[in-house]
Amino acid sequence: MLPELLDSNLFILIISIILIFSILGVQFTARVNAPSLIFFIALGMLFGTGGLDIVNFRDPEIAQLIGMMALVIILFDGGIKTNWGTIRPVAVPAISLATLGVVITSFILGVAAKMLFGLSWPESLLMGALVGSTDAAAVFAMLSGKNITNRLEATLEGESGANDPMAVFLTTTLISFVQLENSGFFRTIGQFFWQMGGGFLIGILIGKLASKALYKIKLDSSGLYPLLAFAFAFLAYSSASLLNASGLLAVYVAAILIGNSGLKQRNSILRFNEGFSWIAQIGMFFILGLFVVPSDLFTLTTVINGLILSIVLMFIARPIASFISVIGMKFNLKEKLFISWAGLRGAVPIVLAIFPMLAGLEHSQLYFNVIFFVVLTSTVLQGTTISLAARKLNLVKPGQSNPIQTMDLLSVGKKELEIVEYKIGRDTQLNGKRIQDIGFPKSTNIILIIRDGETISPHGRLIFQEEDELYVLTPDSERETLEELLKE
View 1: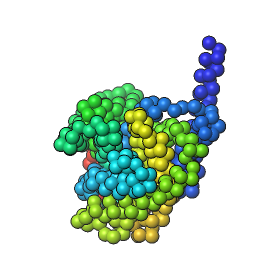
View 2: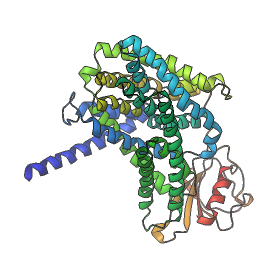
View 3: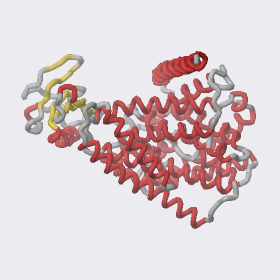
View 4: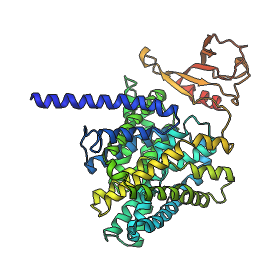
């Protein structure tokens, strides 16, 4: 018993150290404008077999399970924050990039892989498919707080949230071709339409069910609402996957519906989601880092071929795919160039690179090493220059108001009341107007204004200023009216 207890305590100690270093690493990478996934992966490599050999983990099945669960959490967090009013006008280009763009990117990379590695055509196209999609975690993280124009930000986030199903479909289909187990062209096309259509329909069904449940169910603890929301996210993924539809697409669609409904306890759900999403990212990238053996990854052949494939991806495949995918969709040259450069790769290609291992393919380790190297180089070069590219192309919008946040009052037993937190931006309709001229709902009251770090008592003649932080007490029945007023 004592040795087992000591092993358990040692495991807990290692987990705590990893979390502390990872959280501190987030702050460091934010200051140097680098994607945090690089730090998490490096930490996994350090603790893994090729490093300090503290954690010996090489089980692809468990890694795939952890990776897919983490992707569900990340997609749900991104989808629930997505404003449907913003993403609706760019739904067509986002879907085009997520489908046609992934196919074109995968094909060009497949041709390059054929020339570099001398693999068969199915094997070469498989390598292209593995790295053909952008990554939701990387895109959501790198665009957050960068003040990219709404249209571009919504397009890129919509693409990253919706292109995982296409990448998964291409990967599994090409693996079957490599194994000579393909089921025919027409059946493959039918599977594609069912995966996309079925995932979309199941996402709508679960999303509507979850929206009603989260609005109507009264729970005594506000901490239970985020758990209930995540339960619906996993329900959407598992239901769709068991029906051979796209579980990831179902999660993203359901999350958008939930986030744009009359969601109670929105603030507690969003805050919990943010923390849970960080845990998912840390765990996923750390686990994936454990699979890397630095002595295999940084061989001369892998480095040279990986660099060439990365250059093809960033400067040939992604630009061609982006320009073709948005033809006739009123994007100017600068916007197309930014879309081309913002195609960040991340966890999804690395998770997909585990699929060939599970299938027992001959070149599975080659796939993993090359894809891993491509993701690292793409992330380092593109991820650290996103803000610079946006500024150089004049695609940065003026400072805007923060998203509307709500705080529950369960602690004082007032379940029908919420506090709405709102920060006034330069271009919002409240800026420069007096309180008495706004026309707030009848039972809604401003209870606090913070200006330049000081509290101000609200009164009718007070004129709102940019950067004012408002705290507004409103009943549930008037919250939607208040939010519409603040969004104008």
